[in-house]
Amino acid sequence: MTIYTRFTVFFLLLLPSVAFASTGESSNLDLTSHLVGYLALGVFALAYTLVIFEEQLHLRKSKPVLLAAGIIWIMIAIVYQQHGFDHAAEVAIRHNFLEYAELFFFLLVAMTYINAMIERRVFDALRTWLVKKGFSYKSLFWLLGILAFFISPVADNLTTALIMCTVALTVGSKAPKFVALSCIAIVVAANAGGAFSPFGDITTLMVWQKGLVQFSEFFILFIPAVINYVIPAAVMHFFIPNGTPEAVEGEELSMKRGGLIIVGLFLLTIVTAVSFHNFLHLPPAIGMMTGLAYLKFFGYYLKRTSYLEYTRTEDRFDAGMEGDNLINSDKPPRGFNVFNKIAGAEWDTLFFFYGVIMAVGGLGFIGYLGMVSEAMYGQLGPTTANIIVGVLSAIVDNIPVMFAVLSMQPDMSHGQWLLVTLTAGVGGSLLSIGSAAGVALMGQARGIYTFASHLKWTPVIALGYAASIYAHMVLNASHF
Image 1: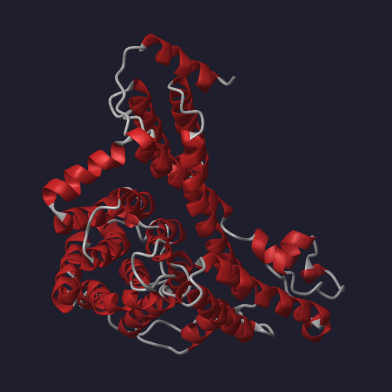
Image 2 (image 1 turned 120 degrees about the vertical axis):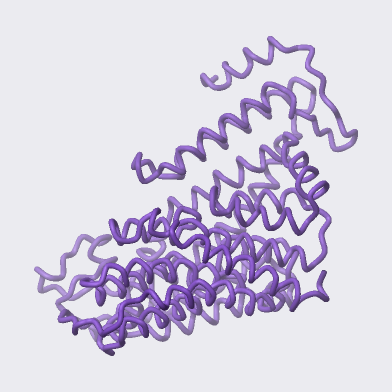
């Protein structure tokens, strides 16, 4: 018995007279006023505080939420067993775990494809092309934002933002104001672009997999998403310095053999996932896993024909995983290895999702999400509540906020579900810490793009946030 179990049992024994509300056949106990409920809230709050200060503590965000999820469900299981419901917690946790498993395998395949594109230098080739073209600062500002907007619906907003920020840092080394404003616009554009695609953000993916919004219906959020980006970008345009950056001298990186084919296979994988969901009524994750086979077979072909691409350059993945430094070696490269790309997935992020989904699921099983749903959606109304969800996404994280909303299952119209999808996606742009893209760029452009530099433009970003909501409610009024 762990110390956490002993601690929980000790306090449960001190409170034998606490009343529980049972819902009959479902055997759900109302623990919102019980010590276990208060302890669960405290554990989750402490864990998320550590997540917020990840950069300062240098503590991976997955660690505290993994532990918090385990502690919360230990306490729940003990209480339910004491009241004769030996398997109620097991049934509930299996339901949450299945939701996570579908999300996990979907994201794992997507991350594997992105890593394969990185290894084939698809994004390096794009960056080289942008740097060589000699655009003005103002042209680059818009080009980087527009590219971020249209790449993020397919790739994730984090990868997209990092690529565009690298270009901004490369060409704007002598113009820090250009870099700072470009980073802000990139974050806004990447988040807005992800809001109108089932693949653009974790929140949209969760809504799609839940079956609340069909694949094609996400695209009616395109114009509101454009407005969300264009309004703040148009204001910032007047503060971008004039002139053209100096030509950048450096290594020109060309795409490796098979790069474009992998891009095509990724698009085919997306089509497969959509087809599985829309026509076969199977989970999209099954379609993504089928699409992983496309990459594995093509990887087999690349490996068998690796002699065609022998170069004395360092391979970021194979060198790191296989132990071969090709710069100082005359041995030919070992070729494309798809398992190296799987190993390069963002495992900390995937485990963070697990901790959040299981912990929030535990709080919902205790009864807190029902209370919040009644307070927000019952008393304030769905429109106000969904706008608040977007603001909360900037302070906390849109993943636990959206999962909480999905767990509440408030009775809303189709237009309201689209609204919360929009607000949860773009609300994180209000603050630099509100999205993974913003946090990553603060580290990449350290000292130039900061929390304060982003906060200065929050009123303008908020104007775009409000305008996008208004545009959705007007343009898509038939869905309300």
